[in-house]
Image (cartoon, rainbow, N blue to C red; front, top):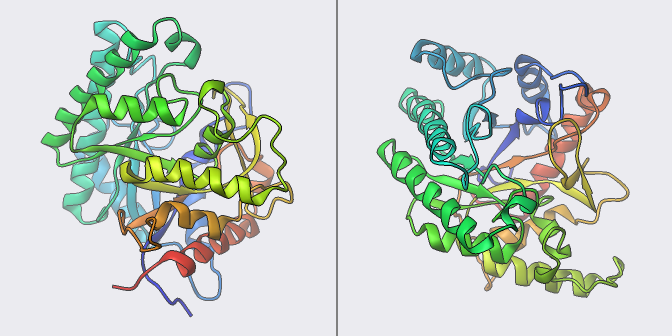
Length: 346
């Protein structure tokens, strides 16, 4: 029996795209992912919806409004809602948030188009919650050439994107991934968000990607766990998680459930970032249900209820695994465990 009905449980469609193609494994079709999502079930509980990457191979942002309405009808036909959207802000269609004027204009325009899709989906009624996800669209090495000015440029671009998003009633969430310059450590992420200084921007925490902030990949000066850290030392790990989440939780407006084995990974055109693992991976370092609570509850243990849904994110799994229904049942089981431990009823 489902004890709580919030936060709503979503699957993501972008794992069928990220790290696929470009000589890697084939992209998994959008309809295939919808089918697996809709057919997943654990003790009578099913996914409530999907979060969508606005990529041309699934659903591009340059399509007419009629196509957006057809998208809503298609997702609804599976008994699902739509939540957060990923704006395709990377080159060549987009551009670096710290790049030339032209690159930055393309970045903001991609955000605008994504917000248009999001607003129409809200008006249709298929999207009752969710944000538009962004990043800096540039690597840490490029950022390191001029950290102060590059962060200022990223913040300026994000401000312009926030102002555009506000016109559509949308919020932007910057995801904590170590592969994006100016966002590649917890301190640098906070610095960037503080410089943006807009009410409609926040942080998207991912239990896998953001976990790597603890280890200081790409920013050893901001490492939280000691260099000789022993994974059996749960007390130190959890103290580190507390420090990390205390700093970022006030910014957090979107949340991804995930597993991680403490390493970085990258396939296809996707740069190295926190390696997602299946929820039951024996090498997984996260107690998913317990550690999700560091993000979903405040220092006093109270639920923040800062967002209405949570989403599973598991990029760069082999297609062989992703084409098995049991994989999605196992993922849903992990999501249900989080909802049971940190959910509520409305």
